[in-house]
Image 1 (cartoon, rainbow, N blue to C red):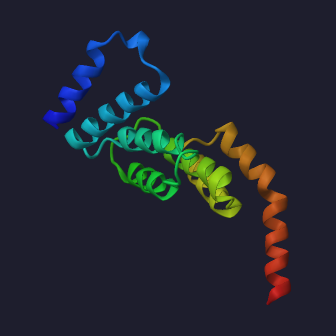
Image 2 (image 1 turned 30 degrees about the vertical axis):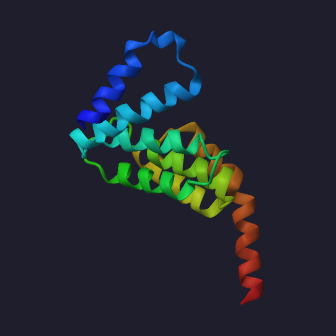
Length: 142
């Protein structure tokens, strides 16, 4: 933790307005790592780390790592917006994994915690036809 704290202080000693997007993301990840070490029950830090990784998937496929962090965030007892790791998992499943049924399952988890989340409702609504076609194919194959 001490080493990360020193790195954070080094980053913040610069004028924060001069950080580019990559430096800002690295700073965010360092802060979230410290937060997760100081309080492993704080889910926001794990979710934020997952989002940072998800935003870098164009560089390398660390989608499983991001999903693991979202899963860990879901299990944490302290979380301000419990639907976020579900929505982020859904986004990842749709964009990078192309897995509509997993995305819908995650959206249903988000809706359990936030009944009126528009994004989750839209994903479920727009995925209905894709899921129905998949079920029909599965019945046809049986």
